[in-house]
Image (cartoon, rainbow, N blue to C red; front, side):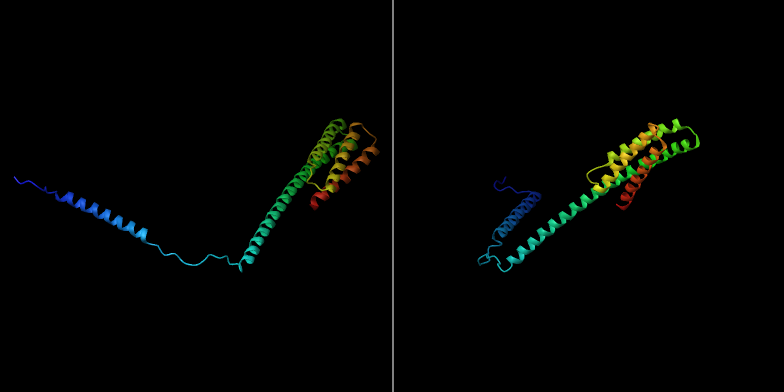
Length: 195
């Protein structure tokens, strides 16, 4: 029986050879990576002073443009909020005053034709006071002074007509207050349409 080196089966030998080749290849790649870029570009770093003013101007223009854009956006946002506020207020004014006019006209028709005066007076007073409350509640800081004044005038006139109906004031008093209400309503509608 022979003693000494043992023979390695062929499959194991190949595996060992492959592993050895991989280790050698990895070591070579690592060595190349370390040795790769070793040259340094010579010279002294210096700022390009001739380009500095143009750069500063560019930055300044960019900042100014950004501020202008922000200002424009804020102005647009404020205008949008004002538009919404005025449209909302005018919508409440137009709707409630229209309802009041329709209800008061039923009262006037009953009064002129000997109809159900007590049955139409109550709803007319209620509609006028409701409209006055709606318009007063619609007034806000976004409205112009002129529109605010017109709405306040309408509120007073609506309450005045409601009071004339509920107190059974003489026809001349009712008509004078009704005329004030019509003028106030027309002024408010003109201003809302103009907006």
